[in-house]
Image (cartoon, rainbow, N blue to C red; front, side, top):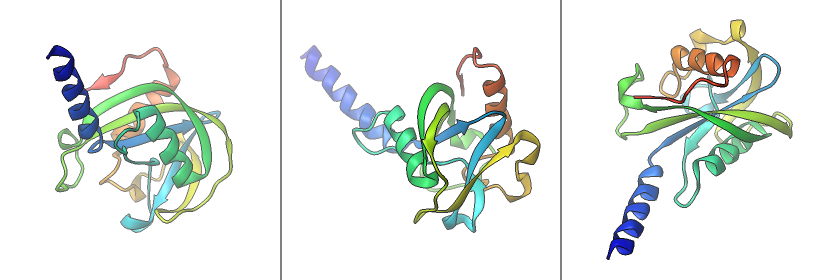
Length: 159
């Protein structure tokens, strides 16, 4: 019975992960990857999306980055796990958690997709804060990721 309960807990957890908005961060030397989200008027955001049932967070972040930007990455660290409702995003009908990863850039080249109109790397002082997709990412969340990039030993942030 205990094993059956653990399996049910795991299944419940995996199904809940489907509702997690997954966000990834790819970095090079002092630069930050953003994509232009077609569904949001080509505003800039982090590559990301929904975790598919059965995917681990690491699998989901590498898939989303590749699909939306054309770059191949390897996640290095979970920088943050935030309840979207606790941050200044416009309201949506879904309750989601956002996972922010630091990733290593392995290769690839910029591409567009059905979801994105393009991708680009930005230095910290070049982030287009006036043209961000605020439903997906806030300037404070991007700043938090730069802090984690500069200080990889920081613990994972969560709320």
